[in-house]
Image 1: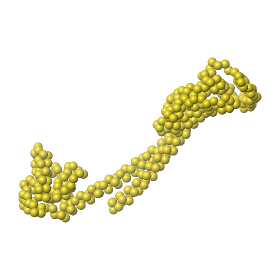
Image 2 (image 1 turned 60 degrees about the vertical axis):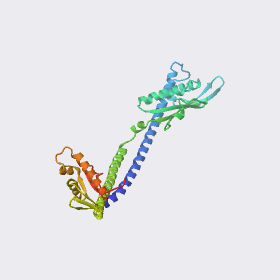
Image 3 (image 1 turned 135 degrees about the vertical axis):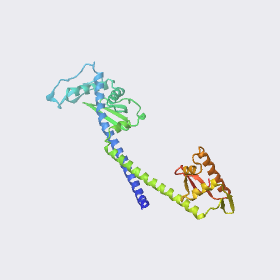
Image 4 (image 1 turned 90 degrees about the horizontal axis):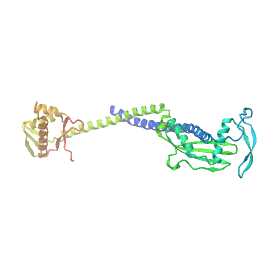
Amino acid sequence: MKKLLNETLRPLYLLLFIIIGGGLGWTLYFEINNSKTNLNIEITCYLEQAAEENGRAKNKNTPTIGDYSNRPDLLGTYEIRTFRSADTTFTYRHQILDIETEISNGNQFFLLLTDQLNSKDIQILLDSTLNSKKIKAKATIGITSSGYPIKQLSWSNDTLTINKNGYAKYTMTFDFTQIHYTAYLSYDFFTLWKRTNKTFIYLLGIIEVVVSVLLALTFIRKRKAKAIQQEEEVTKEIKRRNYFAIDGKYIQCGESTKKLTPQTLTILQMFLENEEYRVSKEDIKEAIWPGATTQLTNMTTAINRLNDILQEIHCNLEIVTDPHDRDYYLLQPHRSK
């Protein structure tokens, strides 16, 4: 009954192990990607802050040109303005925004127009923010502009040197110009792991461990049952073959006969009196050499002598240490090496 139950439970536990393992893997994948998505959104805000801080820092000593008066009653409305440069003049519609936005956008546009906008400067500011937020991520920043003027600036780092598993983009719109800040990111796994919802992951992990233990126990029981079955088969084989006969002080196997010493005969009878032909080493030592300081040496010598006798009379038996418990000897059919 136990064997049948064990055989039934093993495939069930294996199926549960596969299903729960798959669920655990999918949950981990989902949570890591969700963490990555949230970080992309978070770092987009930090990228915008870096662009604004860069414009503010580089223009702190630059005189402000233009109309930056506070006109709350006109916010969101448009007015016609004229842009002039050395070789370009045109009019455009300008949307009136709050002063902070107007100045920030104007700073970034001025840096672009005067070739002072640099992707490495943005990365330094972004890296500083990420470090302060304890976010481990390698970044490379790229800047392009559309409208007027159209430019494509060099990346802050080689885009091929990082594993691009994160992405953030911020676009600054200033009248007829758009500046596009792009960040490719390589997130550290533990940064993503710290931001995952681990409750369900831990729950599935605990269940998976429990199922793994139960599955392992079924295999251990099967292996133990197989070992017991093998030992029983060995015992039956010894009895069936009737390898040898003992006549007084003599052991006979086929046509061969050998006289045994009282000590050797006693040891052999200890094995024959046990149904499994299995005897404790301690029992042998105490039965033959009680209290002797050389029990182990004497026992080893006596067992070797008995094995030599069995081999001499061509008896296909040998005494070996029990592979499942080294404190015991087994009398079993000789196994060719």
